[in-house]
Image 1 (cartoon, rainbow, N blue to C red):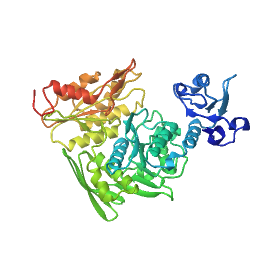
Image 2: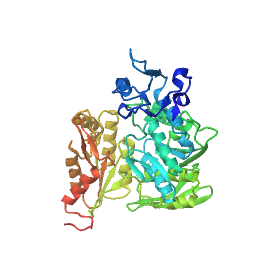
Image 3: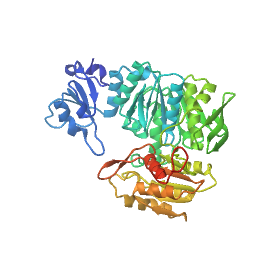
Image 4: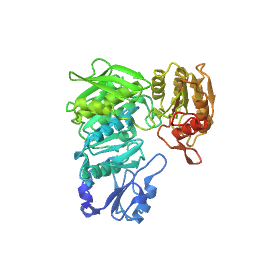
Length: 494
């Protein structure tokens, strides 16, 4: 067990509290045990100070906060300039710097993080390595799968995961690094072996005030985010923002993409309903990839994963071979197939750029129609709603506008924002706020050869309403709808 003086970042603490034994670090008062240090964060909806007394009652010996102590507070209170950075530094020391015992690969960007993290982790596991993975869909700690709370959890949760991976003989951990995590300090001070940048398009402007601020948060991963810069930086050089990322002199840059000048370049790309076929050119060699994944966005994801794997001492021919065998991430252009004569794909696309990419990928799979269903989340950036509406209407043959996770907003008001963009085109559309009814309508409209895209929720198996969070899975509803139409997995109609 460590003492408060051993864990606490500068400045030095008064001698009378330096020797306090610390049993754990917590930011949730319900998890506090005797001897814990409780971190009282101030959020957009709740002030952690409100739970500080509860934490002390449960045995916390110290409270750390950016705010001043309430009058008459009954325990030691330490005010710090940045609470999450303090937690990150203390968590790293508490768990004996586990990020130095394994190799961390961090993936940031707007789209593609989840698929890229999955691809890297699947490949490393296929090669016999013991690994961890942290991301939007789930957390993997060696052979255990855990539910994901945030895309990038708080620093103490990360440190705990890294420590478990290292203790179990793990060698690598891949993690999605969100702009929130970078801006808030959740990954502050971590030692990243490899950093990947996928792309940057409009998203999270309800949190970041501008695209420039959003981009600045992403750049922190390549600058070190409070620690040393990464050893390797794989950056999408086809992305206009990627070309602007500052890379340290101590970092080996590996630009990847499809255009000339990329150090790791995808060439001879063929895409179709059966998947992708292309080559990755690197250091004079050409390595063939044949993947069941579809769409140009997955060419970039696969190439980014290749870049990460070669930095992790995987031979390039071996990297291409194992990438060819990977199924990808749940809810990322995931097909729902009961033998119907048209394609149904579920995708997480929830920005206008991601929606365009998915629809364009579908276009290359068929000469028939593309039917797109989507909605927009409540309590999020309103400005992207008409942009998504326009993207769907411009590229689709039929659009179904529905609810996503309305949260505390009126679903009809969200839909009205979307329709501003939809109605700029002459594309036929319907509005069905009930998502189950909307999915039935989208699939019911399909003819042989069509592609139906159910966009926005991807892997999610819930829907967040104002009154409650309910179970809802686009994949399940699509299967139920297809089964109700008489289709079955054996390919024969009932």
